[in-house]
Length: 119
Image (cartoon, rainbow, N blue to C red; front, top):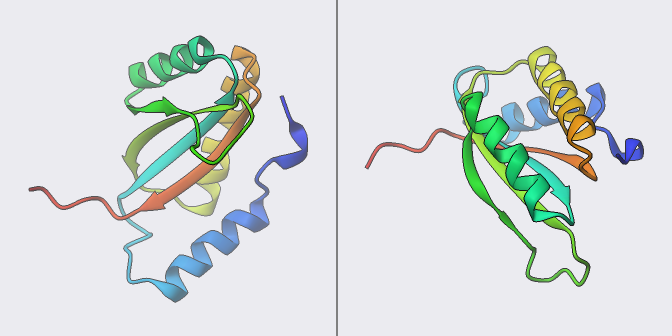
């Protein structure tokens, strides 16, 4: 796995500070967190997705970016959860370890959005 691009604590602190400063999102409460994994092997990514589904994540899909010429695919899973810098750092370490165990190229990080309102 690529260890050169791990998300450090300073980046997480900046993420939380930027959300607090630039949005009205309730970052200290439940948010929709998306987590990404990258590899060229769709089967490995789908196996990762199944493992995460069993842990309560929602499997969103495996996709190839439209503007990317290489063979890398990305898995996205989501879960509504509340994080602090500490808990998000812990979650990232768990997901890096999962990517390592499954032999994936990388755990590629996360994004966050407000929880969608029910229709």
